[in-house]
Amino acid sequence: MKRTTFVGLTAVAHLTLAAWIRRDAEKRDIDASPWGLLTLLTGVFGLLGYRRSRDA
Image 1 (tube, rainbow, N blue to C red):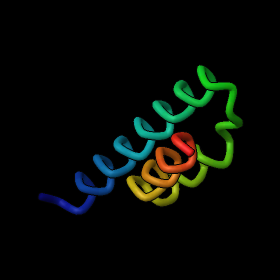
Image 2: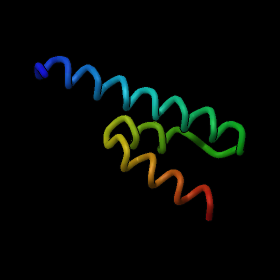
Image 3: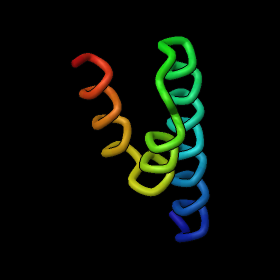
Image 4: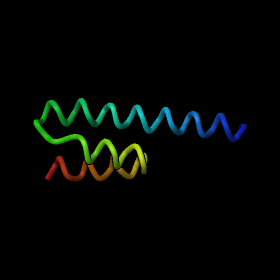
């Protein structure tokens, strides 16, 4: 796989995860901004942090 393809797919995955977090946080009346930014930067790690904090 070319590097540009990998980077593109990674960016799409991060954007998709951030969009999912934003929608879910709005349904739960949670501020999605920090979680969306963290997910854009870290991907799955941001998602895991969000999931852990929302269930608490």
